[in-house]
Amino acid sequence: MADDAIALWETTESARGEIGLPPPFWAFAWAGGMGVARYVLDHPEVVAGRTVLDLAAGSGLVGIAAALRGASAVRAAEIDPLAVAAIAVNAEENGVRVDAAVEDLLDGDGAPAQVVLAGDVFYEREMAARFLPFLERAQARGAVVIVGDPGRAYLPRERFTALAVYQVPVVADLEDAAVKATTVWELARREG
Image 1: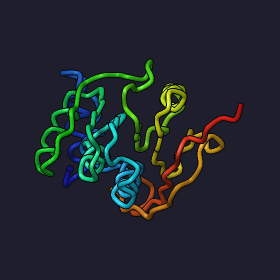
Image 2: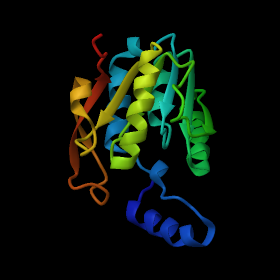
Image 3: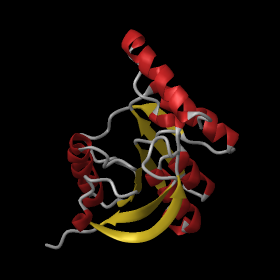
């Protein structure tokens, strides 16, 4: 995790134009991911003995929590190669295995994962429009789908059931507060 969020962001921002670096989303523990990780640590029965997909994994925090709580296998998907490198380092530091890869899975359904976990993915309209159909396809094939969200505008709350709320410390320079109330949600099954 970055000690100085703004300095790292500014460094990658200036390098981005020169060598195509995306923002370092992987360098911070975002509120939604921290909420999901806490939930998994508190409720190991959600992941124990199951295959898990950590979607938009960032630093790997959520996948590492799943591995620590007995997931049979954890796959982390990220679109940033630096995030995949960070996941490898973080998993090794925590003594767990997380198979991380640079891949955009949003056109599929996350198979064969039995549990799909995602933290803080509803932060902009375009991303929400891609994530929700993916999550619905994963659920339709039988996966448990859990997301964390600190009140982002594009989470379709009517499609989810709240499981827990945590007061999560965040990097105040990146958020609008030092602590965010973060809800962990399960995608609700559609009737019919």
